[in-house]
Image (cartoon, rainbow over all chains, first blue to last red; front, side):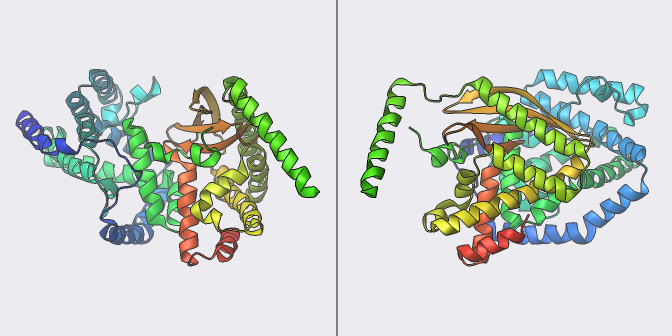
Length: 242
Length: 200
């Protein structure tokens, strides 16, 4: 079942193969007008809903409980990470993430405690967007998605794929999926508050759309190990090149 | 007479400079010196973080660190972008001054939330004609993240001229921000400087 989906994805990916060039500019944003509308919506959603709820959640939940919820959600994301690492041909990370999943699930009360993290580094998370990047798919234009926020054309497609290929989808029953969904929500809320200062800084800037776009694109490339375009290095403009 | 003197000095400096290019290395500074500078800088930042001082005190401490360790006039000029060409020297001076204050407020404000955290230097390498010093910031409640400082002596002394926080180029962010404040003021540099004095 999963294998068939993967075959389909390989075929789908061939369609993208033409656009596998590294970025030549820092920002490629032909959809700026609609993106800005999505940004205005997301900013309002954060102000009126997400941040107040996240604040409330952080207030009500004792810190150790928050951690348990986030740990559980993170552990439940490992099977999908392992699958993506395998698709990327990254056996080392696939093994490392599998070990963490087994350790946490068996000895950490089903993932409530991060036993693996306490004894070394936590596995780095990954997604199908990274898998597509490893297959040579270029990021495409910048898009700001409603609710989900900053993304690129490649990463937006990959988000859908990630949802479809998540191994938990075929392993868990409805109740179990509900628990995963709830803990994921808790983790989103905790993360929102952990980065409150940074997010507040972006939203408070003179052009929060442009700042969020710049943050996302550069940070995403950095995570994927893609070098920034030469034009982003200010050295020559600052000091010349003698 | 005065012009003549100046001209002579310029020729002399020019000659000196071209000899330096012909004989000396590209950069007079060494990797070790650049790394030592960042170690000192990081040490001062860690002291501010652990001081537990008020926000105002932390901001003014950070402003002093920023002015001593960063090539502020060059960074400010870059942040202003092409507009720097149309600004007069009075405007550039005021802008540079307000820019330093704005940077100190914007970043210094965050320091109170860093209490209990610290930054450590990992290593350094030469890139083109400058040095990149990599550090790790370990803050409470967050995964450790990488901050790198770019250091050059092109200004005449060894100073940092840019920073990358997890791949995010500080100068690009600030050029975008200053550009946005300028746009809001329809390109009026004086009005932008006034806004900048309140920003951060």
